[in-house]
Length: 224
Image 1 (cartoon, helix red, strand yellow):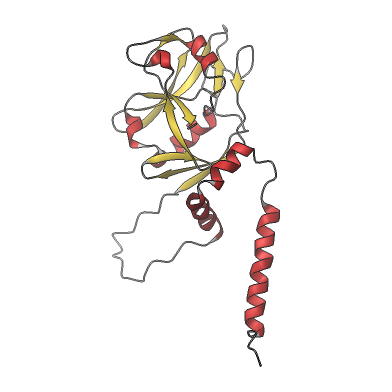
Image 2 (cartoon, rainbow, N blue to C red; image 1 turned 180 degrees about the vertical axis):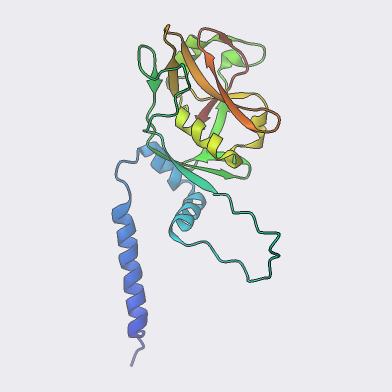
């Protein structure tokens, strides 16, 4: 008689199929095509994120740990950011009124791999307009128009990186990175964009006004 497996094996196999079906049913149906393609083309990243989200952390081998030397808690390898929420609004600035903007980006998974930052499986780059390269400069309002069709990141990502600085690429320590997906204003109507920079021993933030001229001021953007 052919061996068709024990009842317990069939139970396990059937249960796993049901689990797979549950995962498929739980997947969000409002993922935009660009984000979906990003995950589809980065299978290793998707598998790692799902594994870390669904499985408990592996227990280290048991060994004696001196009471005076406790291991440091592991830093998260990724964070999930709801970029549809409003970001922190700096004192004296507003996110309402003429000229303000906050590009909604949905849920974004930020992770760092091989020294680079990824958002939903797509690499985050620091984009420079052709007018900014070399010794070129451009007025901030004109640069904003050039970035209209770029997938620039909003200030929710800036807030998340400040809260998780271990995810920030080391090469971002040179220069200042701007998050053009969110535009603030002050009471007199001037517009500003938030930025991230290395202060010698820690990461810090500030904002810069669009009326000024911009030279080497890269924008955080998804790679094309």
